[in-house]
Length: 64
Image (cartoon, rainbow, N blue to C red):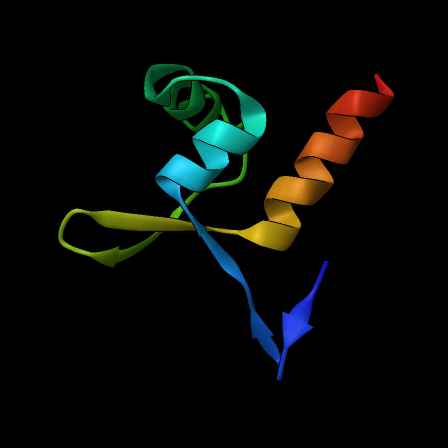
């Protein structure tokens, strides 16, 4: 979980989808069911995910 100058790195929706290998519908279903970290709305139609939260989620699910 990298921090650059005290700022948490954020990932775009497309970066998260590519990293996890799922489609947008699946990702939003996980978010809706509180099974995945919620995105941060940074604009009217723009969301970002904190990289450290996505990586932690991925590691927890790989361990299962």
